[in-house]
Length: 291
Ligand code: C2E
Ligand code: MG
Ligand code: MG
Ligand code: MG
Image 1 (cartoon, rainbow, N blue to C red):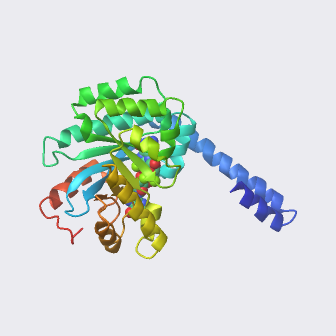
Image 2 (image 1 turned 90 degrees about the vertical axis):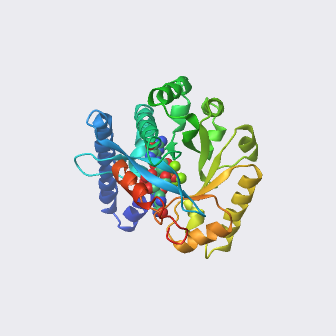
């Protein structure tokens, strides 16, 4: 981005350097504002959790929901793809991630008493959280205090965590021991090592949405999706396709025996109350051709 600004600056000649400086200043200003906002976001109660349903591809039945962090500062909401990397840089992802776990587990524990019994919650974890030496005992207390059965919690980590030599992989192994499920997020976009899939007990692979997007028209994407599904099934691992937006993508994934789907076709992420009404309304009415 800075390179592109420099390039445009050169194109514009002498005055371009003013443009370049102005652009960099603007970016630095924005980052400063966001950092400042994030440092007080917790105490101001500006974070919320949204939930996005994950359903069985064949039956359309609800199998779980992914908890997704939202930030609504007074100045207007900010996209997670912008503020989450900042939380990571500032290491604020450690306290904020703990809050996410507490809220998500408390919510899922409530679901078990009603129509949503058996529905799992999936929570994204940062490698910085997994590197905390007290992470496992902290998670154990959260499970104990909320009363959530460990296998109803699925943690989502990206492939890079599988290569972490600063405690991340050791924590994942310990989480296996607690009975918490482990899903590999954005699968296929990072460095995948089949040996890690074997050493850790991975429960699910989430096929990245970049492979789902053109699945029905791009033979390479079809080949990758099909190979991921075969690999996973051979290792007794389930596959959830991310970013499913159309009925034809869904049918394609169903033909290839993809276990679960998640995406705008089913629903956008929503506040918990909306998620609960959505689930209640559709319970019993879920037939494959309707979803
Ligand atoms: P992710 O874990 O891969 O989450 C899926 C993202 O895809 C979400 O973006 C979701 O809103 C979006 N999505 C779902 N269905 C569709 C679809 O059909 N089409 C398209 N185009 N997008 C779809 P979101 O909520 O903006 O989150 C972005 C990323 O931020 C997440 O990617 C995850 O890596 C991270 N994130 C979100 N919440 C947390 C959190 O609590 N902790 C940590 N560490 N990371 C989080
Ligand atoms: Mg995720
Ligand atoms: Mg993902
Ligand atoms: Mg992603």
